[in-house]
Length: 507
Image (cartoon, rainbow, N blue to C red; front, side, top):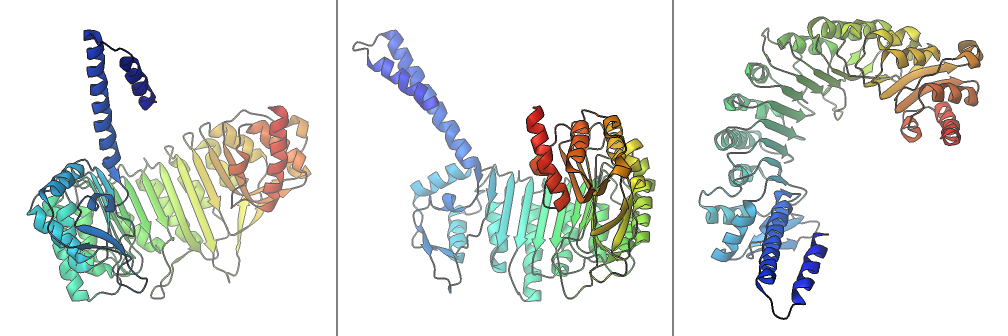
């Protein structure tokens, strides 16, 4: 559109054979518009880069060459000669526009970083960089790469150590130097995210106390799937005075956690490994923040033969939910996704959360072990009592179980519609719509609740038409596609097709 406007102005001016002062002024305005447009577009183009390759291509001596599959690199940038002053000036100009940089699967020859480092001579290459997402291929180049890419105004740094098998002693020294580089070059860093897919975390955690020098650090993620976090790391983390979000992907120590209190301003706590209820309780005991808003305990890490996945029993759920309700009254989001053993009911555990009036999201997913003695979880109307009276701000609720028994009547839907006016997604483990649970269909109440997603795992429906009429009367704005998601049972998907027809006929 902007180009069309400029062309029209240019054509209008070109029609005048003898330009006067007014025409000359139009030409000046046109030139100014073109200049502003070009500058703005260029800044937008270079502000966020999905790869560092476009930036390196500006240096003509660095050539991008494809390497055979058996070679050490997928791509190699080889330096042949020194960088000309013109190329270097153009590189610095574009680099000064970069605010956000990611590194995809590009691999680089060590000579690339050596060439750029020699040319930079200590100069900051990316002075306006705010966010850097980087992956390391070679431990010996970690410090050099970071020293070239980090700027003093960096706010978020995500590092992925996908280095394969490395000599522990050598790697430990590289990590120490890397942490020192980050702390010295980005003192105002607010978010630090570290991922170590195949490296022992203890090599990293030995040097994490240096992170405490980052006085503005508010988010820290340690995503690692195979090894255990040590006491020194936890002690350091608990002492950070500005930390509001902590994501721990490492297994917690098997020995009792240190008896200390910290995390005074923590708002979000995510444990993403194989968390046992005992370790979760010990970790929660370390949190003294009265403003904890978001907790997540997820067994979604990669499986390791070195560790046995913790199985939660009914008392584990009860203890964790009781601790959350007793100590953290401001909680807004609770997410628990774990493997279980012999959990026959979750009614009491959910009931313990009823006092948390600020809850906006509750997501509980359980997976019973394959050879469990009793894989059935008993579900009844009592399970949804907090939704009817306790959570007026609830937006999202999901309870997922492997197999269920019991009976959940359609009357629960009415109570949910009345008790949760802001609810947008409801995922239920079970719903029984039969003649015995419905009664007189004509007397069934209706609402115009704005619920967008209603998904049921195990539905027992005697008549799809009756069920569709009840659901439509309560929730006329449902999305059929989202309500028939992957976790919906076949009976519910069949009813959803009938509901789709009802929506079309009444629209």
